Image (cartoon, rainbow over all chains, first blue to last red; front, side):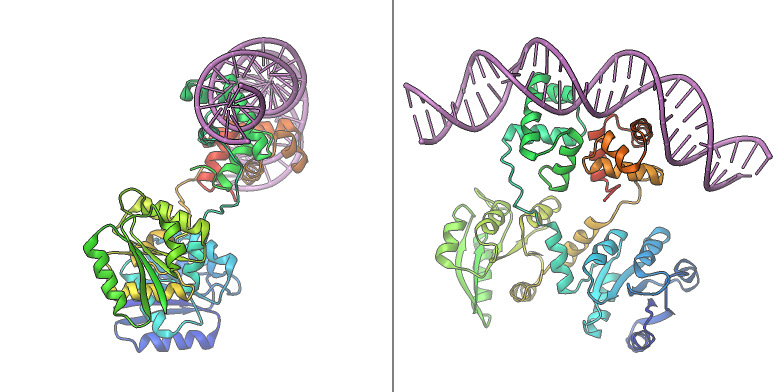
Length: 207
Length: 207
DNA sequence: CAAAATATCCCACAAAAGTGCCATTTACAA
DNA sequence: TTGTAAATGGCACTTTTGTGGGATATTTTG
């Protein structure tokens, strides 16, 4: 028996969800809530296996909700169930949401998603999966024409090495390191080591 | 009609894949190859809609393959089809792979995945989806007990600001910036600005 | 309330980084 | 072959950082 707790401010929708789950073999709704303010207390009482969570809710929204849940009970699965929203998607994922499906998806999809969650899966609507994979793509536009040696030295810099340490690592003089970095800064259009590190890491020029 | 090109060094498996696809309504296999060395040329000739690509291949492997494909024809969908491999997964995704399914998955899954791809989806095996979502999680272990002000100043540093610029931005003296950074370095256990920036960005202490 | 944490500022000094200008060697391409 | 790009090294000089010492005001907290 899978215990499900629902967080959804739309009364009609939450009623519908409960009806659906209560009438599905192996599911049991242990709680329905209209916002996340008491989510930690709720969990203590209801002991859900899975929480189905909307994002847009008054007072305490789903983003705070998933954060709170994962902080105290990381084992409880949280399935985001929401209309589309670009920005908040990744915030939820960073906070540890275990799945993300859209409200427009069918109810069978929801049931399948919860089952998938309990089996250790990570259910996502196709639109979400696409966005998630896109987030991994490396923009190929950043071409600064760094030479191999320059990339190597930049990478050492982004690992916190000083000029002296880089020199030792590469078996060259600190003056040469200085010169390489001068060229690197020119190519990256930056003025300092921290700025170069920031640019290199943000634009994934190095590992 | 969906045109599929296959890259797979295991002869038996590629034969099987072809048999499967050729006998599925709406699919057509336009090429079979045992490595990626000529992938760009192959594409010119065969004009596939989807490429099913193994990772482990002699000579030119699937990681180089997906990179090459996406460089010249980003519209061609690339579906990684491979045994499990932690490290290479994210490399493929960075290079722009559109889907990632495991060889142990069923053949119906493969066919569904290709259809999904053509509809703009991003098919993934459950194991892969789980790993991908995990990659987004913010490790909550990094607690360096930075104060709000310290976080603010660290963030400014990771955006390439010098002590002087941070001072101007925060309406404080450079000496105070210096003092804050001294405390930050102590808490992060680093010795320099580049190192702090690297740590902050790698461990996502700042945006 | 007293103690601790936080944020602010100052000074001094050494170490490191950034800039400019110059030079040599190697390798590869026009 | 002549030039260009790349990697190497040196020196001088200024600016910036990093570290240590000190101090004060405010806020938070036990």
